[in-house]
Length: 134
Image (cartoon, rainbow, N blue to C red; front, side):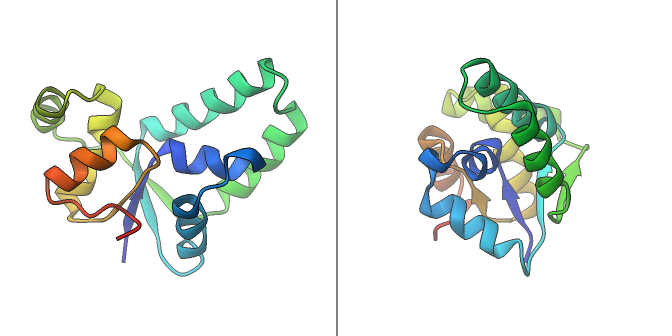
């Protein structure tokens, strides 16, 4: 079964002090299942890593190794969001357009959403999209 994974979950895999049961479960599921993410996931994840390099929490070699590991995971990019739906979800749930893109994808595919973002998880529940820990 495919599921949608957001950048908060993937970033959690990089940082030992951000370990979370939902992130661990998503990583385990990727051993037997595939995930999908909006194309912006690629940028969001790399931005989180670079920001944490600047803060001294991560190093360039760790970023390189982590991205190599993530690159081997079965996570496919989705490049076909339905713009009007993303806008409507962002407005209805007061989400960023970025977060609404994850919700739109999960809703469109009727797929569970793995996220650590509480507002996004709440919006997913309101839209009938199961949160990944369900």
